Image (tube, rainbow, N blue to C red; front, side):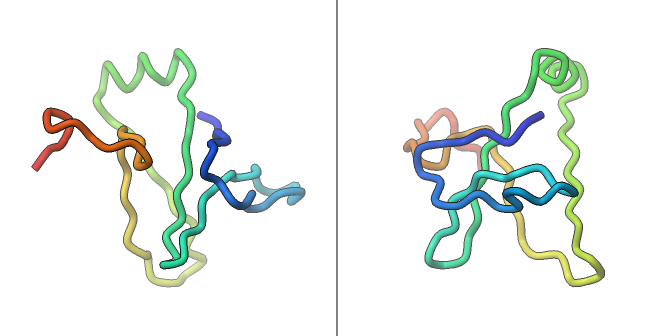
Length: 85
């Protein structure tokens, strides 16, 4: 899985930091950070088999902030059949 550039991004987090991969992101005025990740064929196969995606967040001992994961592009209006609830 790699972080993917996208048209709305306005920053690259950890750019030129050897210990981290660069992370293209959109940082909104309200502080929300949006990123996009591209799965390779093996990862797509694994998700199809297990239905699982794992997330690790480095908090460095601080409280975990609210997060959201999605398979829908947040910059494209979802169709009614794509919205779960």
